[in-house]
Structures are given as structure tokens and as C-alpha cells.
Image 1 (cartoon, rainbow, N blue to C red):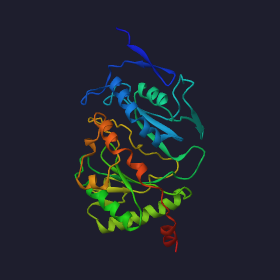
Image 2 (image 1 turned 120 degrees about the vertical axis):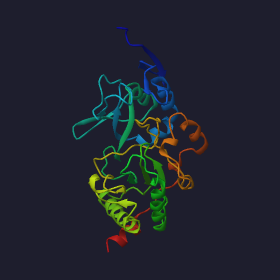
Image 3 (image 1 turned 90 degrees about the vertical axis):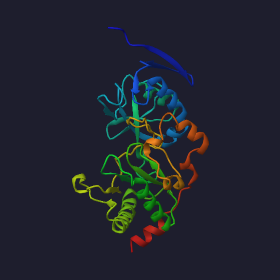
Image 4 (image 1 turned 135 degrees about the horizontal axis):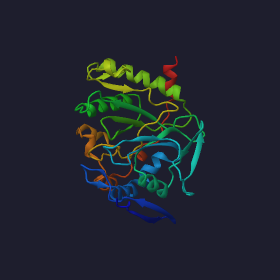
Length: 295
């Protein structure tokens, strides 16, 4: 049996071993491990911003996206000395804060990056995220649904940024002033979810059981809570198109793109053109909305 191919690269003064660089991780898209690492380097300024100072869970696909996968919470061994970690509730998490750490994870075939919704050592949410989860694999109405949620938030005086999940759904990101609790966000989320589902009952549902949703889109306001994770902005996903979770403008949403339109092979050019759309909306106060809800 031939031995595995190995090499190494130098990144910011650290040597990173690269194994099986020609391994196809996304066969349909033709993305090998080496191409993946190159694309991760392009994504690094943006993906690191979404993961820095958070507890990281990755999903690893050692044989490519059609192979067996597993969730990695505990930092894998052996651990290079340049990879920082943080212990939370008995789990030693990797802290993704540098390009060397990102490429080290990429070599391990960490394809998806799911950070905590709070900062390390904190208990308050970093932002507010609404998750729109289709009940069918191909949902042509997902951008229409996202647009309705964006309009609702705008009517409440809130600016937001939609992003593809990279899979089938869309998440609505709302930058907020730090200090609100997860329970307070859940109360606001429930209010918005009830309004949206009552206004568009054939499109949305807040039914937790998938078997009872029919073909409606699940308005998930419960996922945004302490101890849970969500796909980071700019994380790749284990989909045939090598899609990437990508922030959009609301104008783009109205043009009804597919989540698979944004992928590893075109994300670099897009980011050179658009920059990080998540940084273009400043944090906002939710105090007035909470004040009315608590009456």
C-alpha cells in the first residue's frame, strides 16, 4: 500500500504539516484539500472575525463530504503550541483566532465551523440571529421568506444582514448593543415569529416537530440560546457545490439567489468586491422593543 503524501507549509512563523493535499474533499466541485487551504486563506480575515473569542465546534470529513463525518468539540491531539484553547464545562475547545490555527484545522478536514453564540467567559449573546429553516431540500421561497422577516425588523427600527446558511436556509443577523440576555432575545424572537407566522401562515411555522411543518419554513427563534451554535458567517459547508455561508444585501435577496450560488470557487472575488457586509451595520439598541414587550 502506498504511503500517504505529506508536506508542510510555513504560516506566520509556524510550520503546519499538510497530509494528502490532492485528496478530493468536494468531488463535484473539484476542490482538493490543497485548494481548500488556499480558499481558507482567502476567507481567513472574514471567518476569523466570526469565530474569534468564541468556543468552536467543527465538523470533520476526513474522506471528503460524502464520507463519514463527526463533530469535534474537544481539541484534537496532538495539539500544536500555536493553537489556543479554552475549557468550558469540561470541554477543551479550540479558539480560532489566527490563520495558522485555521489552516491546521483545514488540514484535519474541518469543513464546517460552528462557534458559540457568546464570547469565552461570558454569558450574554454577541448578536441576535434568526434562523429560517426550510422543511424541504429545495425551497424556492426561502429568499421571499427572508425578505418578509427583514421588512418586519425594519418596521421595528432594526437594520439587519441576511446570510445564506450555506446549506438550504437563511439566517438574519442583527448586530446589537452588548448587555441583552438570551432570554430577552428569545422573547423578542417569539414576538416577531408569532407576527410573521400569523401574517404568512402558508409560508412560515414555529412548529418544532419537523413532521408537523408540512412544506412551511421553520422560523427558529429558539436556536439562538446559550450552549447552542450556528454556522459561522463565511464557513464552508459540506454540500456538493462547496457552498459558503455568505452575507447578502437585501437587494440581492430580492433577486432570489440560491444558497449554492456562493461557494469556495467564487467567494474570494465576491469579498474583494463587497467586503464584509456584517461590519456595515452598527450595533443597535433593543431597549425600546423590550420595554413595550414587558408591559
